Amino acid sequence: MLLKGIVFSLLAGIFITLQGIFNTNVSQKAGLWLTTTLVHGIGFIGSVIIFLLVKDGNVKHLLEVNKVYLFGGLLGVIIVYSVMQGIVNVGPVFSVSVLLISQLLLSLVINTFGLFGIEPVPLSLNKIIGVLVMISGVLIFQFKY
Image 1 (cartoon, helix red, strand yellow):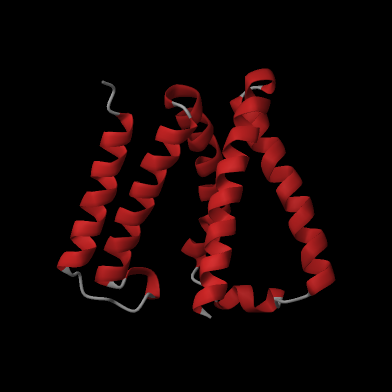
Image 2 (cartoon, helix red, strand yellow):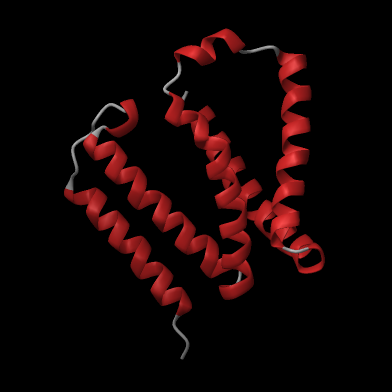
């Protein structure tokens, strides 16, 4: 399970980076909101096709889901738009670095306090040091001689 989680996390990191750069390139010709709409439209079509082939869910069970969690798709719209804005304004490396640190910080808060049904995990010194090392690394990476 650990290896599977690592592999899928690596794939997500690769595809998030590629998606951000591809979307930014499209948005420079088509505009940010048209690109965001196009990206999610194509993603929706792809998801429906895969769902129909794999059939790994039950639509009836959606009634049991906390309705707040269904706004994840809307968060995706904000994510795509924000990533494109970040890449346009500060470049891909710095943008993705800040994105990763913000993900890590929010994940740490969610994990520590057990938010959204996640099992709480106590905050430890090594986690705090790890976050500070990442932030320091980004600052050093951005430092110009």
